[in-house]
Image 1 (spheres, rainbow, N blue to C red):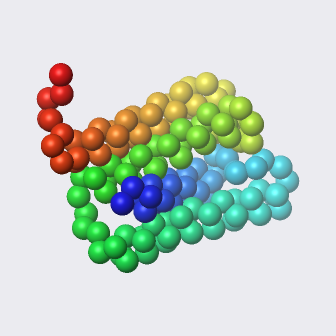
Image 2: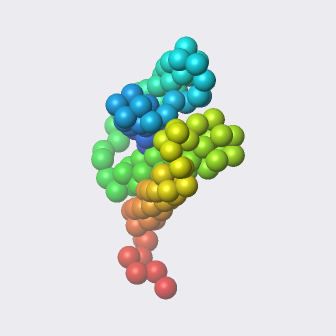
Length: 139
């Protein structure tokens, strides 16, 4: 059940990024350039994140999965891993865009990457705790 949960997490993270940072706050676009490039790449990104979300939901529905800690952990893993990839690879390495274009980016990047790591680690811990026979206090 990990794959559908991760796809849902990617879809949620991407959709929140697109709606909040791209559209509402207008902080950045998927690929910075002229307006037509920004619109095209933001639209493609939105299709990807929506497709990921729908695919994961359909997979869960077909499996008749019930919400539990394992599912929530997988969703958080997907969301955290996606934002960690976005913050490190797309923002820092490839420099496709910054968290907030035109501003000093170090603080924004650190917060973005820190939140991504916290979400990813929380997801990993939830999945670990949800495994049968997992000890709540491992030594």
